[in-house]
Image (cartoon, rainbow, N blue to C red; front, side, top):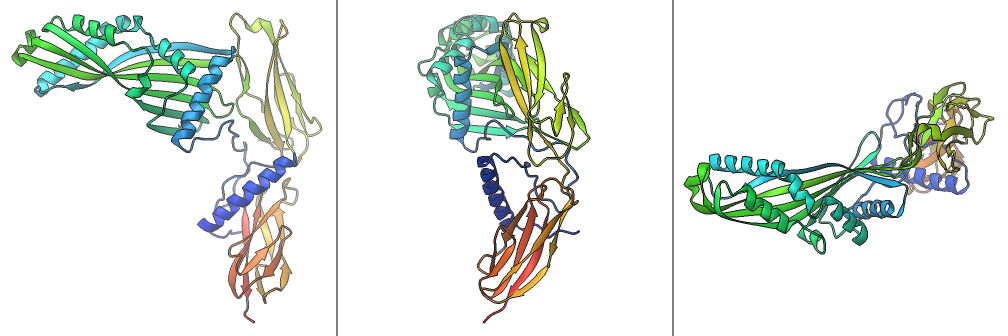
Length: 430
């Protein structure tokens, strides 16, 4: 059947009602479906429910900074975490100076070669690991801006940007960097004098939204470098003067934690259907595949079974979820585990509502009847909403009470799939 068109105010009411119902259901330990978004056309039966994220997506600069800082502190305090440097790179961003375009191009090439030729020298004193450690000790300074995104793979990508104050109390590379600049520009500048000023810091973090783990980290230290003296060689026409550039030093880390981690925290299986549980094993240092065994368990095998290889079979439909636990057991007695919430359900395909029109006087009542289709759908819950409660209200059982003259719509919305049908209610004046 054709459903009523979406309305922004109605959508807000639906969302608010869903949140309330979800909280009540959680409090009562009665799990339901994760609701899909409303759609104009019937929603096909979902192979997978929507993901459950371990961390809320940051909605502000403060939340983003707190989330990243929390992950950094956790890494420091949890011996199961491993931090592996993956890349150390310098790059010249912008040349500063009153030169011709050709000279600017040459100078930028010179700075780029400097970054490549002397990156090892620049990393010997105060390596990026020192900054990483200092951030863990002191916590993040106050960020000035941030960007955040969430990928289809369920990964939070957060970049926090800080000013020069981020370097306060941290070791910088001023002395080493300046000496390296002097050496590098000796061929083109007589009596070279170089100086370096830290100007900013960016922290880029990737957080797995399913399990809340920080997986990748990049620290970008921003500098302004200046060199002055008498130019020679290809730059002789500059004469005496100074040049400079903004340079970025990017330090990247891969981060992982020992244990076993399921790929999806929530899944849906049809009765009679099956899926294989996907998971990742991160081995502690010194351990091999021969040092552990993997086992699986379903919390309710009456409607969901799982075998020794992680194949899950839906036995019968249930409005409640089963927890499938994958356990990693090492020969030394160390045990890690993770869980996946699985629903075995017949999905809702639509909803019918009778009657579809009502005419009432103030304070009169009438009962609406709603039914989900198909008849054997597992989650039959209906959410009742009034488009205009100053005209008529509706309770949780579908009983409509007229309030004042006017016209409104009463909606019956399925909890599973958010299909909806409406009844037009006209309240006549006295």
